[in-house]
Image 1 (cartoon, rainbow, N blue to C red):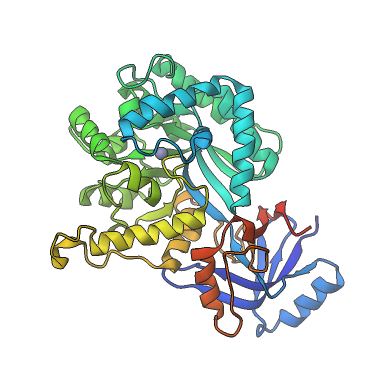
Image 2: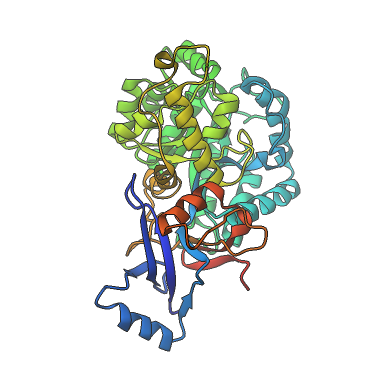
Length: 454
Ligand SMILES: [Zn+2]
């Protein structure tokens, strides 16, 4: 592989709150999958670089209907819940877990079942432009290994975690780790498996230490996982202060918030992703911010299971690392573009308030809204910052994870009016109206992983 160049309109949000749209940009990608140059038509080297790429036969030109955007980063997704997408959303969190989700997740004792689901899931996410996914798998070691295998085979960047859930009080007999010791041993075995996988030399897929959430885990498991994350230099993910029930449960059990408790177990690091965090306090935010841990904001799932909207603006104002998650199947969409839309809607609901019976001035929280540019930043550069990955924007040294969005497809929900829409209008329209069938090509690490243009 000698690298390649793409010329066309690029759209990305390298800085939160602004967008960068360049028409006729020339993006050069090296043989190793990293971006080497991003040139604008008025750059001095542009014409020479263009001619060289053309002569060498490594230039691809996008058509006028096509736009190149960074691949999307899903910071929170439960892979085994894929068959449950769009079901059981009328239940409260505790009932949903005990009556629907745990019985489904228990089925992954069967690796053939895992193969069937995980193959479908990874393909569907790539087709939705998700180039990086941060996965909870199940408590089963073998099935979790299969999820890592599917990411490697299909070329999706992934963080995969064997879920730890060993507390007999909260986890059913038919689906839990036999003991804290076994859960820790299997977590280490999984880390070693992923790091030794054939074809994973570039660490496309990484293990992530995954206590389900405090209520599912014994203190022994939590402290052991903190030590493993430290000793094996691993990312960490868990749920944090998601709902009234979950937040109160931890306050009752440990006499402190999820954030404080997780920190005491060594589970809040620069490489931790905390899902939800809707009920975090100001001191919690300061703790998370000081360490540089990340938050996976899952706006759609929050409407169903969280009893409240995440204080996104407050977190961003404090400089916290925040990205977006679909939280399949707590959320009913696999699309990170949908997650952007829900994030905007949730922020608007928080700002205005939702109960018309209240006076306007007491109904909401002032200055809470975000716009489409901040939403897209969360789904790309923001998620990358949370994970400490060089993806999510078009700049030299960043991995080329990207998607080609085409407004010219049949039955397009994305409609561009050449005489009415500026390039920035088109960017906004992509964030709000593009769907899976507009995404025609997806690259991860400089390699084409999905191609509907052929
Ligand atoms: Zn979750």
